[in-house]
Image (cartoon, rainbow, N blue to C red; front, side, top):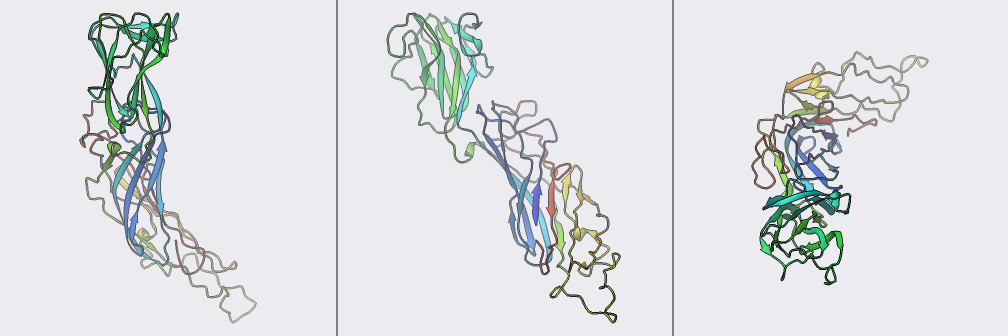
Length: 390
């Protein structure tokens, strides 16, 4: 018995990255399907999807399919009831550069952008500079650490740095001095001028630099660092709950045709061929030969549930003609899942639809489940041996 739950985006709204992360982050989705009857338990179709390098609001790619399974030891009827979904985001360990021209950096005071490729090797060939007293630049990010990247050059202003609103250094940053403390005589680009403490918990943080003199100061980039996060952090979890009655699906798994030791019943004429099953005879294990629902799975998608499941065949011996299953039946049911996920990573409330998805969750997402359209696919296969199904 296999349960497969495919999901896809149905609108332009998407799950959004909560921050700056290198390639390798993972979006993990897990569903719930309750099973009662011949098999009792909770199936958890699940699947991860590795992501490319991300910035806040980047669309997250969904897993191609969630699956789980169980083995049936006896025939019978099972009732499947779909439940909700849980979404977990695990950030990749690594570093991401945030260029000084990134719109997520908030500038106060007279800053000027400058293209520097002809003379200097600044990050992405540009830099922000200011001579304004108290001019500042601030970045909000999610991670564990951050570094301030700029130039070292003679006669530059001293810089005050705040992390999460607090000054975390005993003195000011001095870009006019080299890393060994000596006065600069030339220009060095892409220099790490300051790095935040390494023992900070993963989560939302802020970094702010402020010019303390009416002298030249530079901002080339901020480097956002994410340490090892072995488990999905609570900050980046969300859930989708059903907003209507999903209903249930009953699937009947018949037993195999008894075969004894595999020999055939003798006939009056030993020279005749063994008896062959009539392809038009009804299945003796089917309580209602005219009801095709018992031999069905379910694909939930769009406005209907399409019930289509391939049937297996059971053969007593090599000389017995298998029973024909005929064409596969199709039925349509009222949609079981017509839900949109609600809640956000940080607040538990979906963001406005006219804003980009800066949280892990975005409003207006419809999960479509099945094969062609996405969906919950319940498959059962009749065992090729006597006495059971799986």
